[in-house]
Image 1 (cartoon, one colour):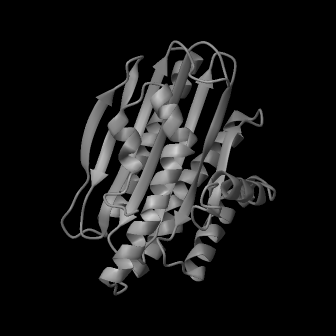
Image 2: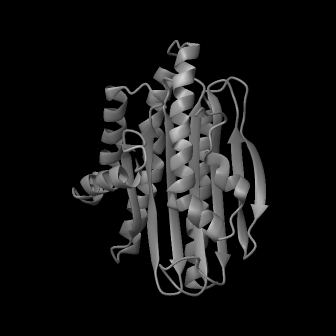
Image 3: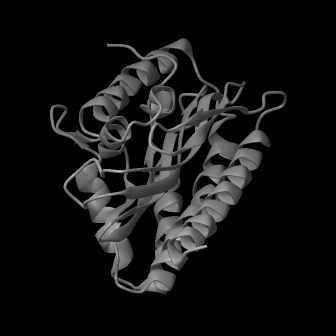
Length: 266
């Protein structure tokens, strides 16, 4: 087994364990529904698994895993063969007062370089709560501070820039953290930071869901939620790099489009 093969196996093991922990945590909010899983294969090699939940609390939640490779990297960031693996998730809640959340952590390796990327961000669907945003950001800051006081301010600002919808002239939500092409030259430290982002995700969002999923709501609230979901669709289809990379690299369209809400209104 080569050093690269060992590294890939190590990363895949962590990501699969993280994904399963998130799935089990989400299911604690559902009285009956459970994630349904569907495997898929990549044309170049490898593949992934879609995990989809439709329940009483999560109108739709997707927690997906992928580990793919191919002969030619689909972009300007590297050359030759590539390996890419990650966990990506999205939630669309039945209660409009419970925000949508997105998380992704990924690792990409090409012939001449490698990098880590990811983050998590919160999108209220018409009903923002300052205390929820503060808790979400405080958790993200706590995850990053052990690796440098500069990381949270930098990654938070990058989230503001990345999750901006130009044609709506607004941020997609209340932010979070975002990073890409992260490589300090110290693989172990970079991996540790990246892993901590993934492991703290449920700490950031579950207290919010435990509280907001019980908030009374009306049909008018649902209409507002549907209108805000439309903005989410627009961002993901027009601007999101992950969506673009997924299609360019030959990913599974069903997995890529799991981020779409079950309903939206224009």
